[in-house]
Length: 100
Image 1 (cartoon, rainbow, N blue to C red):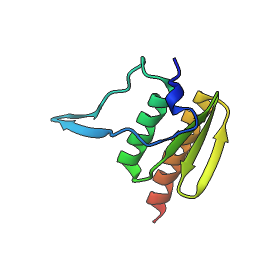
Image 2: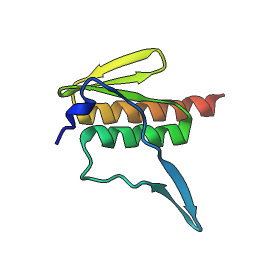
Image 3: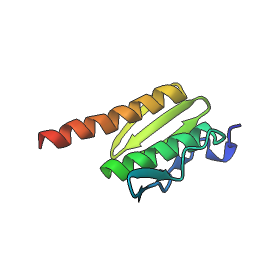
């Protein structure tokens, strides 16, 4: 169910951290399938920030999402496309980091 209070509002990344547990690493909080699409994207943005230091803000207008990263905005027309574009941002950062 969509939270109408977030429609048109700029949403910050969720506070996400990685915790080392002896032989493995886990994420807190874990992704919760019951969250709204916006909260799932905020979680993903928080994890990307944790890995890269890149802050991705999100705006939702009805069924469209806007990714705001720095001075750049990108409108995307579905949740899964937004998730995939965000994955591309993280992958691009990983590739660029290895080239430096």
